[in-house]
Length: 198
Image 1 (cartoon, rainbow, N blue to C red):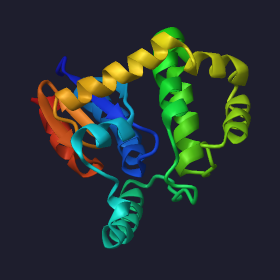
Image 2 (tube, rainbow, N blue to C red; image 1 turned 60 degrees about the vertical axis):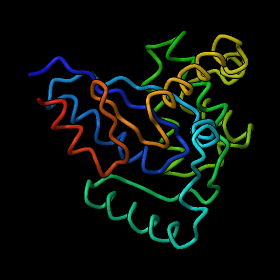
Image 3 (cartoon, rainbow, N blue to C red; image 1 turned 180 degrees about the vertical axis):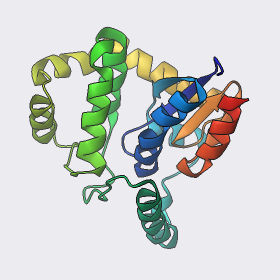
């Protein structure tokens, strides 16, 4: 067993990030690594690096939709493309950063609820009313969540993590680090496993 750490830089708005999320906990268990979720804002990463969503290239977007379905089938995980894509994830990612800071015991439950509402039973989480209803159903206080995402320290944490990701070479999501080595994409998780096992 190793004592390595897998850092998972993620944004809920990425379907391939959801796929990685379904596999990384198992990889961490099987390699003895610690899995650390690092919320970042993908839009901020794109702006800083000059990158853009693959769906902006129509042919690539069509191919990617089929490829994601293939990966979901290979791993036996539920996946439904969100018809509201792309969704502004600023509030969602601030929520992740804030819960990690202030209510770490609720972080995993939040992550599961949001990924499910994005990519399993898709909802328009860019709509404040829809988001509030989803949070309430998942057992969260929607008003407390609104206060959390408006907190200056929470906003600063998300900005800092996004800037750190860019400084370390991240250009998209999902991005994993084992030590200083960056692995991009849900289709590179075998390399993450190897690095965590070494």
